Image (cartoon, rainbow, N blue to C red; front, side, top):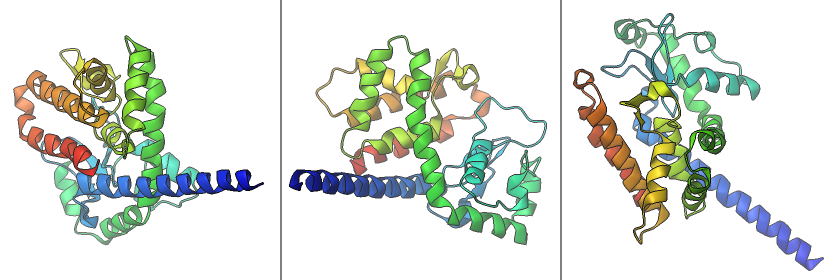
Length: 252
């Protein structure tokens, strides 16, 4: 009987610790994407053709626009509805209600913009749950495309099960995706989780799994910029990307 009680207490403690860790991950992602500022929960970044919203800056395309990157907001919307949330009308649209950055900037002056940002701020927790689930599901997706699935699976769990290792995995998937879509590649080379884990699996240095992940992320992100069309000006983003990846080590 005493042994059973010990086991129950153990699982309660583990659940509590993991819950706190996910809360911390949510705060870090919010800080990474939106600077931790409520007013940055809906943005239209310079040089992009779409808006981004929520703590993870989920991409939302305007009507009749088909981009190369995964449109992640519709999946978040469905998850919020599944959890019983009633979305403001504009957030329930099939497409983003702004066709251009100019239209978006005008909208920021309206009461509706505050309503949307309030809703996104109040649902930070459920957005974090969505990001966590997406990260965990990503492993099964990338194993289908991996040349050596066992090595990739081993690398994934070495990072994920290390102290605070959930943060690099969860954040990077939200940040740059799984790396399995052909449209998210330049010169047939991707920059998602799969490509980072490939680097981790080949890294024989005597460093922690998290440090291997950081090195791999820096490599594939730098390669992305080198492979990109110079007209896109992606070099201006690289420093910020590298700084973000460095937070994986700081928190660890």
